Length: 110
Image (cartoon, rainbow, N blue to C red):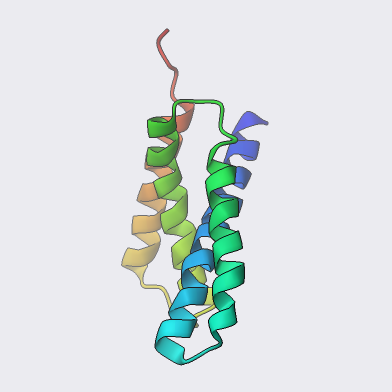
C-alpha cells in the first residue's frame, strides 16, 4: 500500500509541476492570456507542498520523483501535445521508473 500511495503522490506532484510550467509556456510561446500565470503559480505552489508530504529524506525523494516525472512528462507529450511516443521514449520511461523503484523501495540500512 505504501508503494501505491508513493507512486500516486509522485504522479500528482508531477502533474502539478508540468501544469505550472506548461501554462507560462502557453503565454510566452502561443500568445495566450497572461492570466494563465495565476493558475501556474498556484500549481507550482501545490507542487512544492506535495513534495513536502514525503516522510523520507528530501534528496532521496527528489531523486526518485525524477523518474516518475519523466514518465508523466512523456504521457503529457502523448496526451496533451499529441505526439506519438517512440519505442525509445517508452524504454527510457520504464528505465526511469525502475530507477525510482530501486531508490524508494529497496531495503534501507539503519
